[in-house]
Each structure stands twice: as structure tokens, then as C-alpha cells.
Length: 163
Image 1 (cartoon, rainbow, N blue to C red):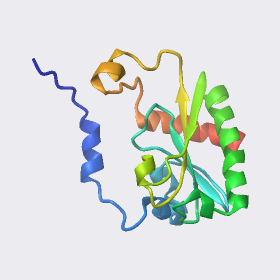
Image 2 (image 1 turned 60 degrees about the horizontal axis):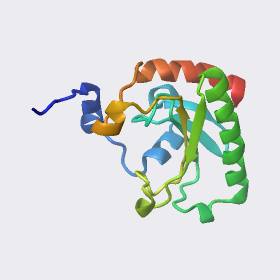
Image 3 (image 1 turned 45 degrees about the vertical axis):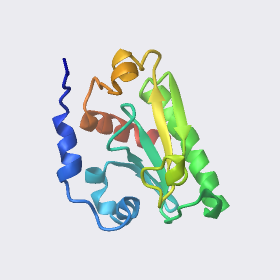
Image 4 (image 1 turned 90 degrees about the vertical axis):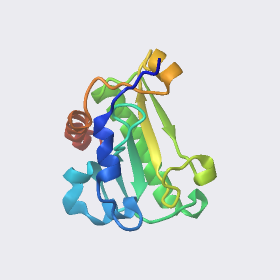
């Protein structure tokens, strides 16, 4: 017997109007829309935004403003700044969000698994012991105990204390 797990909130992904061009450049260029775009932090080199379709609750990305598709073409100053922000982000997730661990990673290029290969970005994914349960293991499905907006509000309130 086939079981169906409904996720009606995902319909918005398919129905929402997508910006023309690079989604990350759109976020970079629209600072006045930070709340609607779920930006946690921005400065002259980078911005930090919640992953709208996260691997785990609290998953966010550090993204350079400069549109670059290859890490080797990113200015060293920007790369070092991304690394410094990642350290602060890990602290935020552990201290403020009670994560027991954090996965950090970049998928470089389409062949490397990047969903948005044209603009590099660094993922920070909070983790907890036992957060991979039977449904994730056998049904390739994730269950979150809270909604995206609640998580965004919590992390954006913490951001000024860490970044």
C-alpha cells in the first residue's frame, strides 16, 4: 500500500515568482527586502541568508556579494571573511540554537552537487544527535518540529550578538 506524506507549503516553491537571473545576486541587490528574503546579516563583502528549503531547521548560507561560480576565482580577502563568518555562525548555532554539531560545506559546480552552481555559497547546517531517524533513512523524507518563519525570527534576533 502506497503512503502519501503531504507537504503543502512546498507548493509555494513552484508557484512563487522567481527573480530574473541569479537568485543570490537578487538578494544581494535588495537590502531593503532583507526580512522578506530571510537575510540574517550583511556587510560589504557577504550576506547570510536562511536556506528556504533547508536540510535541517536553522540551515543558512554565507554568500559573497560578488557573483563568482568558482572558489578559485574568489578574492582571498572575501574567502577569509567567509571563513570568519562561518566561525561566528557555528557559535550562533551551538550557543543560541542549541545545535550539538554543525555541518559546513560547499557544493562547487553542478557536478559537485550545487543547486545554484553559478554563485558560490557556504552552507552551515545545525545537527543534533538522533536527528536522522527512520523516516529520513527509509523514506528520504525529513520532518521538522517547527516552521521556517519561527526559526528565522529566532536566528535573526541572535545574529547581531554573533556577527
